Image (cartoon, rainbow, N blue to C red; front, top):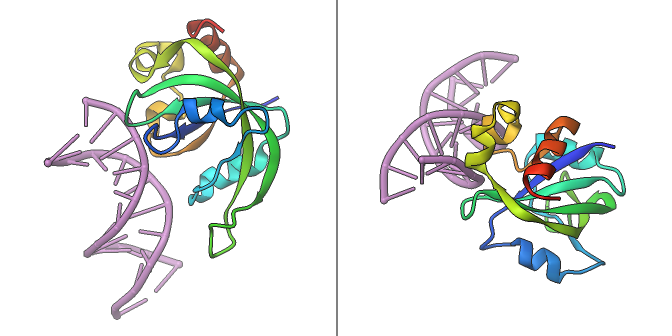
Length: 137
DNA sequence: GCCAACGTTGGC
DNA sequence: GCCAACGTTGGC
């Protein structure tokens, strides 16, 4: 099973919003980047992703799960882009901040560190385990 | 098809 | 609020 990381600005859509969306979850739209789209298309049902707060917080706050595979995004007039649905699984007991990730040499190759602009990105198994442990999950 | 100019994202 | 990094657009 692959793991992922998705980013959201908390003033637009925060972890709290995601939790409030409950078991039926919510669609993850607004991706207008082909690299991010490729990753969305590669996601499978039941795969988990870290939920990261960009701009404000700058930390991984929770874990979400894919509950609906890639489908067209109605808000995209070109019809090229799409989205998946996520539901909240559980919060991290202790959020893992970008500062902490940068400070850990085992996590220095994360895309989050090297390409801050990519909003959907893969996470390796090793990185997933390290961050789960750091986050008390 | 190249590349300069521009817009957006997101860390600081 | 600034600016670096990156993606996209559009002229040639």
